Length: 246
Image (cartoon, rainbow, N blue to C red; front, side, top):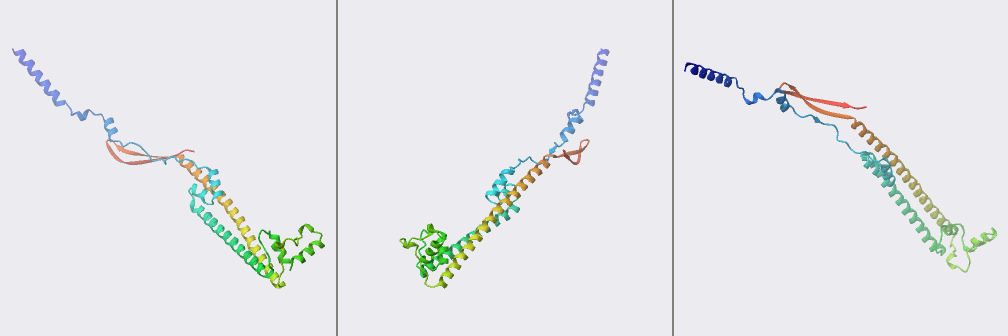
């Protein structure tokens, strides 16, 4: 009986010691697991990759419409000036042509009134001849002396006959026709300026697109990451890592 009592007491003592030494469940979590739970994931802040642009497409776009290649390359601040110049040049060209046609129409109307000339289905040389000779007969006589028989206006074709009322009116018509031609030539110079504007814009668009692609290549070599600064279980701050690859 005494032996049973001693065994029971010893069992109770051991049980108490086990419960006294038992730790809460949270204490069973290792420090490494806690740190892992407290840690904030690494953030990749590197620039999102973008596709490169076609230099050829930019050049062709500006050859067709100045400024469009720069717009494609993301540099319309430069391209807009080529587009504005293009609009202005075409307006100038249209203005010159309208003015030239107006002067020529006035000259032909004047010749119809003072020389009974008919300009229907006639080439420019007919207008030149009317300005240089007072009558069709005078013109034909000159061509005959020069043996340019193929240039003679046949008397049987009345639509090619003219006769100026005064020599002064003939000279006035001649000056009006020459003025019309000079304005028309100015329009041709504007066409040349338009071509140059297209070429300059195409060159600019090619350079802008190449620079854009080069900047993308530089950005692809940069990596930016953020991470946390831990002191045990405590987060003390953030860190940034910038890596450049050459």
